[in-house]
Image (tube, rainbow, N blue to C red; front, side, top):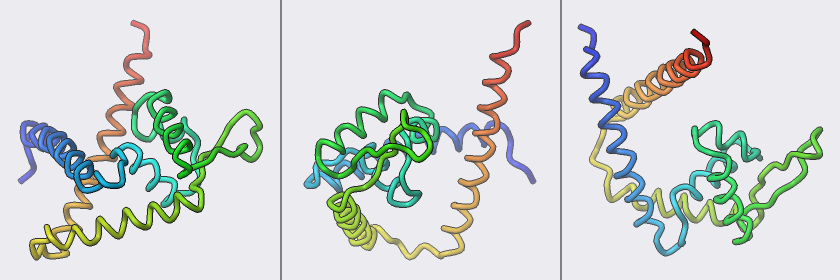
Length: 157
């Protein structure tokens, strides 16, 4: 039996609530490191995917370039990232982790792994994988729907 539209919208609402809960958790977990969840996200994205431009990071999150720029500027001021001329485009800058930034990310990951042990509740790996699979499906379909809605807004009647 397939889910109803109400069940799907309730799931999106639950995920939104979860986002804010996870944000509070991250803020408290990393309070000593004095890093925001947004800064952590930027550092982890660069660490996982390599150097990125501010527009790439903003587009991925669906937020303004100015918001990402503010986050990047804070990370640059702390010596965790730096800006370099992008290959093939002298006007564009890519954001890189500095040596200090790489060490800092490793420390954050270690702290997160250690804390995960305190909240792990013997969740079967199959359940985690199903949840990840569902999240991938939902992310893909919401992104597709956003593109459709953006396109509908561009059409002149």
